[in-house]
Image (cartoon, rainbow, N blue to C red):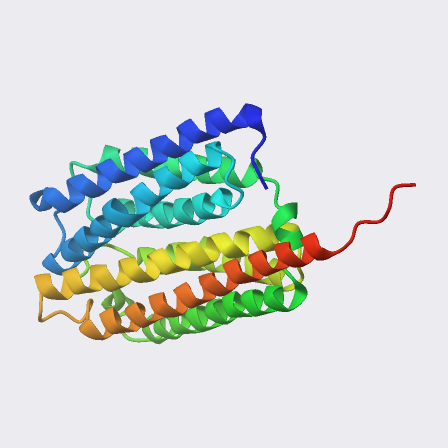
Length: 286
């Protein structure tokens, strides 16, 4: 699963650029709140997201990039998952906050992260992960991801159908300061279909399924932590709002713990698979 040597340097620079650009966007959002022009609740959401990106997302990505350059076998799983997390929230900076003075910074962060994510997926060899993920753990991880996709899709569609068939569809974005819901847009257009494919590939033990399932679990933990924090910031900024709630804080904190458990199980299964492969005697040379 190690990236070819001749490509490691260029990929490492691209990953580092994504980490620093995301850190710049997050730090400016967090420490210059007056630049945000949305309602208090969504400004709070943005600052909460920025905090997690700055404290966890960007530093972990930089560390994983360095470990990948040094040949750590599992660094690509970390890099892809962290890049997915930063790309998701880079899109949120661009679309969930009204146009402001940080627009070009957000564009730079999103652009470098998306290109680094694409390059990381294309330049990695997934077969070594698939070889180490036994059939039953692959089914467990794949089933876990598919369950999340089904529940998340049902939740979003129930909200959308209820409003589009109601008297005023715009009630779903009331008080957000934006014209449409960017979470619905990117989840239903890209992230949920992608997660479904990843879950199915993991369930069927395809090489990229085993690799990307781990990356998805990394993404899921960071995103759950990020949503819990952004909901806390949002409800603190505007205690009267229904857009951010303490109930969501508790829910996503629990989901983060569950996600950590799933990630630990995945890592254990890979380690166990590696041990079993090492114990299997190789056929004698002719």
